[in-house]
Image (cartoon, rainbow, N blue to C red; front, top):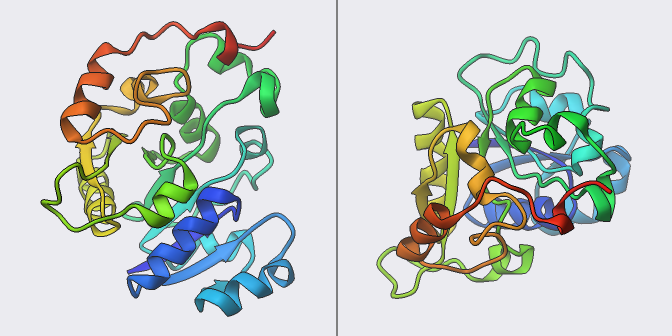
Length: 220
């Protein structure tokens, strides 16, 4: 599979390494340009490209950048990308810690719905609740006792199925977390966030989530 990754922070770097290890073709980009990715490209065999190139010519595009930077992506980034290309959002909104205030999210729009609106494309939300080091190191074969599960939320059934298969390929049990507007159940501050639960534990945590943001995860 051809995978474009926009963002080379902790999650982007981990996904680049894992997908290359699985034999996928990976094109990786960041805001600093391809030259800044020479070491990662040499280590993994991924292609260092521009943001526009990462969004084009791939089967899956992963957007894994700070929430505050999503609005700075080119407004036409996905304008001519075929509708069948799957777009994954791994992001989280950290108003006090990093992103500042985003009014629409503070007013109740789910984080990934806000991202989808900015991109002009439906997205699938996953990889946002797991520590990057665990994503890199803790994948295990299907059927392994205690296999970590990851919630996957989205509106497009076919896109979600593709993403759930990728999650499984990486060594984690995918759990259908509902529609994109239900993805608040896996946002920061919810019971599943930052936890390494198995599939039953993820389902329980999603069911127990509260839509109200706790003070730590609201703008001040």
